[in-house]
Image 1: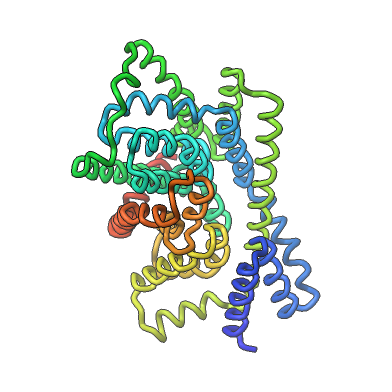
Image 2 (image 1 turned 120 degrees about the vertical axis):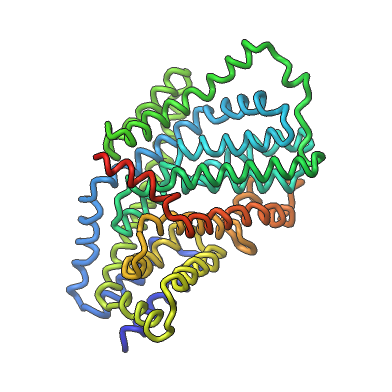
Length: 441
């Protein structure tokens, strides 16, 4: 069997395994183990052993459980609920104010959690019912929650960027910094769209009644305290890292410690909260570690058969595609895969092929990591099987139908596509901050 046939068989076998409903790490690990035994015989038993030690020797791996713990403890203690109360009062008087406040809430949650699922859960259970009660258009606000929650995989501390850094062997610190400006730019574009849409169709987003917002300035200022804790956590975690005071791993420890101190200060750190936080943290961390381990084994087999060189030869030599045409094809493949798979599965499947190809074509792998992440966000919300669409359907109130969910994402997908194109045309949007920070060190 030729190496090209082996590569296609591995991909086909993995997709079949994933479509049967097997866990991602089990499907990828099984295909990797089978292929390695077929190619290398009994000597292949050393491959997972070496992959495991490569994983455990990678120091930034320590950041993963820290950030997951931080996100869950802030969610379980209700600090995010307090934050929405602040946005409700301060932005409720504007046309579309609660929708704008929801985007702000999602940005803060992203900066505290790094997972899109947490933002979706908070937006669907807190913000969405409140906006429906205020007679906001259900289609528009459903899109707001989905689009805002997608920022969790782009704004630091993005767990997806940590995984990309591990699998692509790129510095996570640079990836984090590269995601900051694109993340805030995308949030800004969402807000601009909401403002313009509500100016044209004010009936979509009525203002909160004066009675609900009428409180003394002293009380309003008191509500701002809800935003102080997330800001301080973000500053101590990311700000100290940007200033070069703490390393990446130290920043994750600072963030986890600050979140715990905040929960203690608010007297919400109960035994039940801690048990649930630790259980969730352990489960998610172990899942990601198994996935990374399977990905490393899969990548080792692909490196051994020269699949990367074969793909490069196919695109560049046989098809005579330009580097930019190859890049666009890669992005389109993510959109297609995102209809069926989550971001982790997509990353594990294509990173062993795409990242070396990107480097050989002369593109920056840090910049490409941001393009990958934004394209994943778009794929998450692409019908018919976008990951976020079904999460929203599971969490949304009964009056929001699947048709409403599908219609709601159209303008936000267009906005995200605009952001993707801007970063492709102007790579410094993503690269300026990491280049600036690391040039001082």
